[in-house]
Length: 351
Image (cartoon, rainbow, N blue to C red; front, top):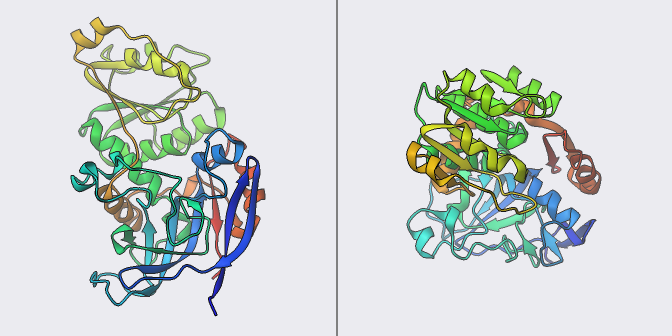
């Protein structure tokens, strides 16, 4: 008789149900993993509220941390053992297109949140399930002792690693992070670990306080002061070497280019909601040789870096754990998470 498990399914806008289904069957070249934690990302919140359009029924969750339950007899990766703690990622990529073959999984031509993953009968990212079957290439082993709540930050930190690496910033340079939500704070922590001075612009008092406590060299309330002027004052009128937009607000995107120093880089990390075109002074970009780029998702190398940073304690996202909920209370957890002043809510699965 096929073993059963529980999975949380978005059945329609504003509705998520925990149901019992068959545990996925494992092929010889796959690994069966048991979920330990999965964070509720902003993307999942937008699925719940209907802002992100998906094919129902849909299983969300992509910030996953799990334990290896069983390894197929055709798996050749000898580094993986039953009982290992692993982060899980890149399930929505195809692994075979031009960009995946070049190692740029973040640009996968066939990237699709609506495909079925992990042996589930429903479309989605799969993390809101007790068990998944996955290829070993999508597992990233943690060092023994990493807290399971912190392991769930591997995926978001991997995206931040891609963003910071793409910016090309070096030690002793200055960066501005727009927004002090989860992704903004992860940018702050990672940039600081690389010896980069960080200024954070954030209108919320509590989040601004968090940024200051975690080592921001300066914090700005953009609703009460001119952030461009403050940044120029802070940098001897040069501007910042790097500017990272982690806020979804379309109003800030137009302003940030003026924060950059000559030879500076502007990274549009966050997707912008609602979508809005921005005005740009091409002569300023031309004269100052400003680079404007985007950063989306991550690749396998970013995951490897992130799990090592978390395992070693180089990056400690503990302050970003706002609350933990047992998996079966996911509806309550999402309602809690919709409060925009919160950071990450972590779902914990039974042992």
